[in-house]
Length: 64
Image (tube, rainbow, N blue to C red; front, side, top):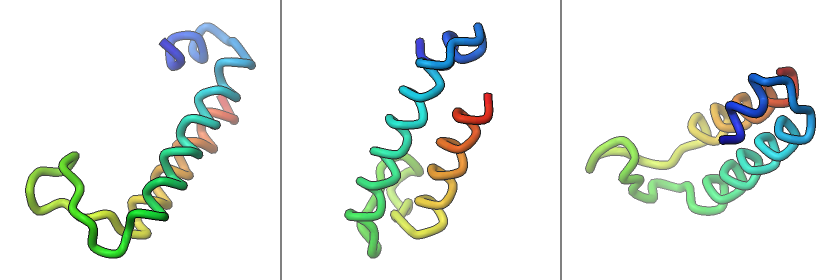
């Protein structure tokens, strides 16, 4: 729903989406270090690259 609101032009939704993704990035950063991640199958691992990708998505929400 947040993405739909952002596409409709809602600035508060863009901030909310960026905050949500920022929280996800923080959780990934805390849990990284080789912790398993079920989102990529059984071999997925949380890495700094994943954290960086989530931060980039948060930035895109703010630019939308």
